[in-house]
Length: 268
Image (tube, rainbow, N blue to C red):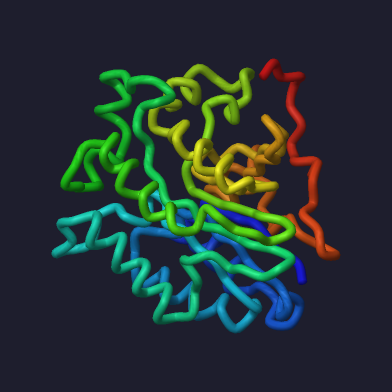
């Protein structure tokens, strides 16, 4: 059994959707696919993707991202309702949103949101960041993070030999390389929450897969390997690998994956 990682599929773009629909029907029958959020806001397209992937893999695991809960269709007025519609759709099509657990391996989805623990967003980001317009919640971002993290609490005591976790949002700000453009650094407040990392430490995860940043990354910090393998937008081939990445093979988590592209030396 192998475990494959991807995120930020953005199948609103036909070429992205076609890439995933055309995955082999035979090569992954014993394998698990982890999708760390951001498929599309369109539930009909999400269903199409799920129905295509489920027969191709032993298991498909998913956690929603911010794009998935955007309110774009007529009649959509509540992002919480959209979130639970996604979970129900996943369940109906055979996609798992709860942990996969075996003696050898646990794979644990981590629900979260950003809470400005990486910094306060500027006025410009508050105007430009689509979530502030396309999402409607019943609470502020900090309380929203509380709500989602509480969903993870029952599953933080896994006893498997190895543990993989995955979230859409980033667990620590230092996962953004220091040499990124100033614009990317300005987005840090809406990238994640340091409280995610607190749960990962309690879980004693070996490898954490995250999405959202669209920046390939593989790095070890405080004993946890962190991996981003976003598929990304069509124009992002220079920062996204555009392929599934095996993170568990031959009965063990793959540590020290060399992610691509390799940029200038970073100072973490």
